Length: 115
Image (tube, rainbow, N blue to C red; front, side):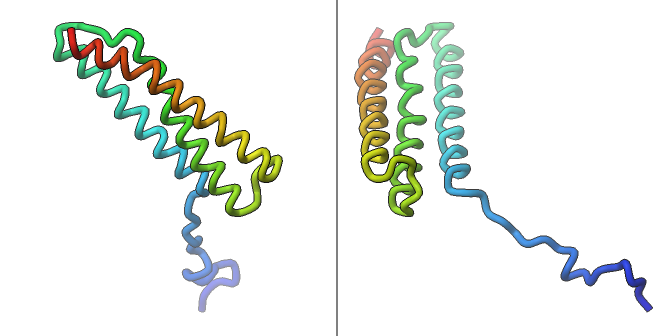
């Protein structure tokens, strides 16, 4: 006879709880950062120690994109702080960050590959 303190094996098993949307977006952003860092390190290794000066603004792009995706998700669910005007403001700042990061980083990256 089973002890009264023992639980049914089905009750002991906890259910699977998936990560929130924000955590998954942050994980994809982290993957983008890891790939970017690996590229920078491999570039330095395989080009004899050459650096990529002026390309740091490119690191603004993954966080801007991830924040924009989270903002759109929250706007769809009606859970964004500040309502629709706040969401639009966040999206405008994200777009500005993405454009600024690409405008400052891509020409420096092209110059680093060119010579």
